Amino acid sequence: MARKRIGELLVERGAITPAQLEAGLTAQRQTRQRLGVTLIGQGAITEATLAQALSEALEMPQVDLAAITPDWAAVHLLRARFCEQHDLFPFALESVGGRRQLVVAMADPLNLTAIEEIEFTSGLKVSGRVTALSAVRGAILRYYHKVPVAAGPRTGAAPARPARPAPPPPRAPVPVDDDEEVIVGEELPASEKTQRTSLADLIREREEQAKRRRSAGASPSPAQDKPKAPAGGVLDDLDYLFGQAAREEPDRLEELERRFWALMRIMARKGLLSNEEFRRELDDEAGEG
Figure 1: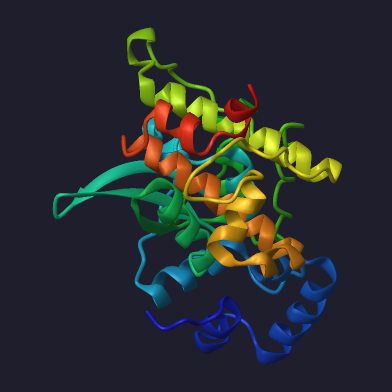
Figure 2: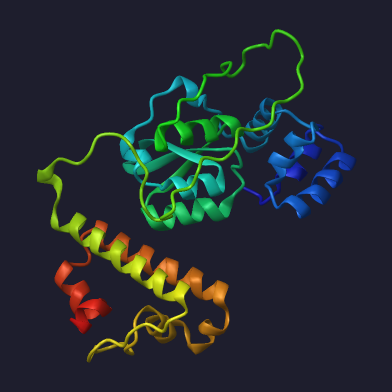
């Protein structure tokens, strides 16, 4: 698929004029919102028109989130905060050619950064569906935060009379601990609390400790006698992999560190890393104990 932006697609399909696009881009630079949200807020386009134009241009099916029951196995794969940041909602798992895919409803299906991150952290190919922004945010509120959301008109239903587009609902409140899952549904039975889930919990705990150290501006405590990598925690592990220059770019360093922990979670989920190996080779806290 050619990499195009939402604005280009909308102009090409006659959904908005070049002047409306320019006005939307000007406003977007100030609000830092996504362009689709800005155009809807300006009244240049409705949610339904935006979703239809994207669906037709990208040859990607639409989904009516109000008419389906999400698969909790899919919902649990992504965190509420990530979904809120990128205006998307995972609702199903499907098998194509013997390979599992995560089906994700997206207000912006051209958000390749979000798609790549999902595929990297989940290990699953993303199968996108176009949907309205308010429907995505409503699903996040309902299924992640247990906030009742009134059902709107189904996709394709004709409105009783023309109306000005309503602004999208506010984003769901974000938990104070942005890495704590706020997911409701069926909990894993005790018998499924395997060594893998135990290791995943340990990795998440260590990631939180690393975040707190970085926020406090403290240097990580050096580990004891670790072979094959310099001592000093995640920052030194990243230096070992990417060079000392990584520390000179805080944003880049944070991204690399986030991917480091994501890789640890993937390895734990797939059984490629044992609890003992993690503690011996990578766990700073274990080295201090």
